[in-house]
Image 1: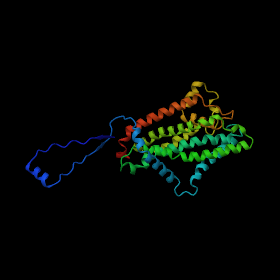
Image 2: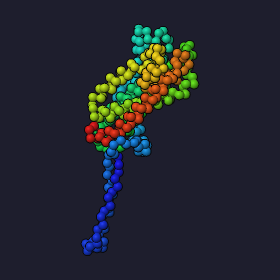
Image 3: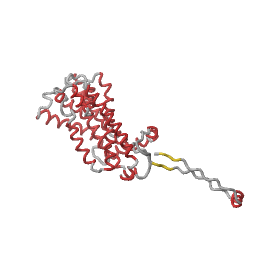
Image 4: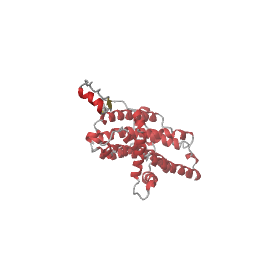
Length: 315
């Protein structure tokens, strides 16, 4: 958005009428007019403007949280029920029946640990991908940085993740008391916020692409669940990553790591279960995932800014 300065008023020559106006009446003061115009072409992100609207971001995130649990019987308990039930299903069908992961007594906790960053990514991407369309009444009525909408939808999923993380700590304590000291978090737990941040950044990058596309092509909303299902099976959540990478060369591991969620999920699992010798550091795959995440974020920001000027017209 550009702000054009008001044009100066032309000088008015003194006349008899103007002399009478000065003598007996007060002239109407000049009103400054500000014209809002969309920027042309590719534009950089105005982070200063985003910071000025930080309270709006917090308000929209709080609104999304309230809407999500409005008129629900269990409320925020869904943040615990979903990852627990998913891990139970994976343990019964993938591990016990299909034999995925072998006879690993820690399969449940390893799967639950991987489920948390995946659900953070899945929920955040779903919310951000549909955020502009669901806020169309707000977009068409008042100006504000449109980036605040997908950013706030990303932040609204952090509460569910925090609740699930608290449950994970209780599960780790339970496993340790049951005679599994290898699940005790070691020094890698200090870097787990890095993988949470990567999941949020990836959600934002993909969310910017999908939300901007969703404004113009409404069938994107049907593509998001399908995309996430395919992405889930390509990510080592319900199966150990070793089953995929055991026979891969380093270049192939790098290509596999270009799926950003590979490095994020395995990195989070490593940081929380660093004492388990079966869970190794992600290494080269983490570098590939970080590179892909940054590229998606940068390209998503610029594409979103390119399309931003048309949102109010076609949403």
